[in-house]
Amino acid sequence: MNRPDPVQELVLTTGGLGHMRPASGTWGSLPPVVVSAILVISGAGPDTGLWWIHTLAMVAFLIAFSAVCITGADGAEARWGKDPSPVVADETAGMALTLLLMPPALLGNEPFFVVTTLAGAFVLFRAFDIAKLPPAWGMQRIPGGWGILLDDLVAAAQAGAVAWIVFLLM
Image (cartoon, rainbow, N blue to C red; front, top):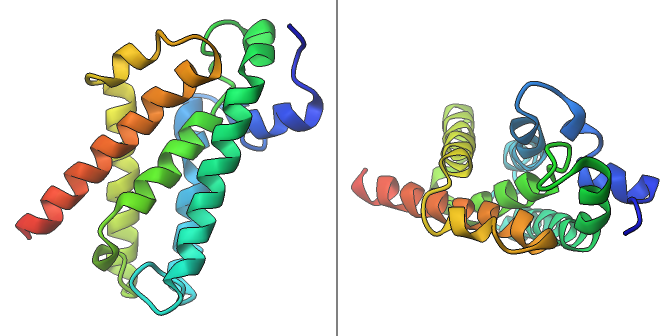
């Protein structure tokens, strides 16, 4: 198995965030949150007429980081071992999916709601990613990049479901 090339390594580590300590996965989850905040504050949130910009950005994060995770995992595992902590492309993709699944009305233009919703989405995703509730735990047994990625996508779906439950109970 070949080691990842420098560009692939840069994406696998989400621009090097995977090398930050402690909690590299937490660092790797931040870029979609930051981009989402910038878009919402600039008027391109999911509850505006420019919703498609936010959606497109999150879909781009999801697809790009999922693809590099799947295709580059063998090389990353050859370099750093099984489910390596420097690889945080899975967390980046998972956080993007969480933001795609959030109730659009929660990301209004009021700064307080933007910050509260994004912080809540971030905490929910990280909590589910760390807890690895079923079926996420079992996904890690799948070999290669799919095993690295799928548990994070399940955690994202779980976080999105909880966000909807909270929204509907409000």
